[in-house]
Amino acid sequence: MKQMVRGAVYILLATTIGTIAYAADEASNPGSFSKKDYEFVKAAASGGMAEVQSGELAGTKGVNPTVKQFGQQMVTDHSKANDELKTLAAQKGATVPAAPSAKDQRGIDKLAGLSGDAFDSAYAKDMVADHKKDVKEFKLESEKADDPDLRAWAVKTEPTLEMHLQMATNMLSTVSSK
Image 1: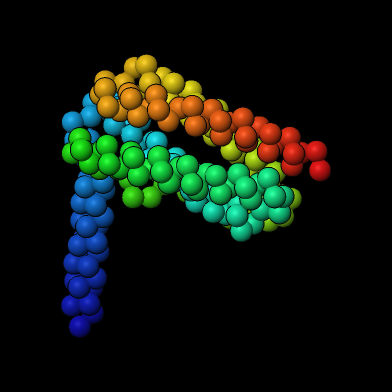
Image 2: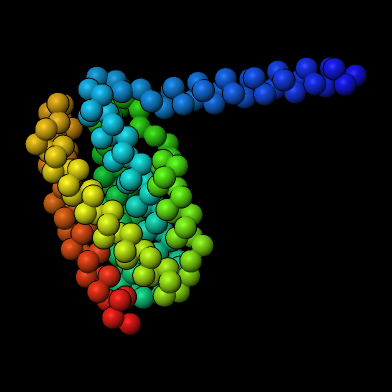
């Protein structure tokens, strides 16, 4: 009896591992994107989803009205950009991640554990740092992307990210002066 149970557990475990491995492969289809462009697509998709989730947290956990407003702006703008990127990827036969990367998820989880002024301060700092990185990456992609459609999307999206960086910098000043 123990051997039957053990055998069933091994089969279930092997099936689960195989399913996870298949799902990971399925979620990592570059389609016609070059490797470099696809790495950007995956990072942009993950970051965009993280911005939406963090923005939702800002709406519920933020105490400063500027933080709440900025969070809503992130949800609106990044949801739109995420949809555009998904559409572009689908046109190229590529898949985008269905959830933020593990690194991005750790940041979201960290924010979720905070509240009040501590949340506002951490969120504002994260948004400044994240948007500095995003602007740099999108500028590079807007100049160097192999795929012309991806390059055009980066060119179109980058000014919004620059606006977000300015807004985040102002938000950080607001919550830091409290």
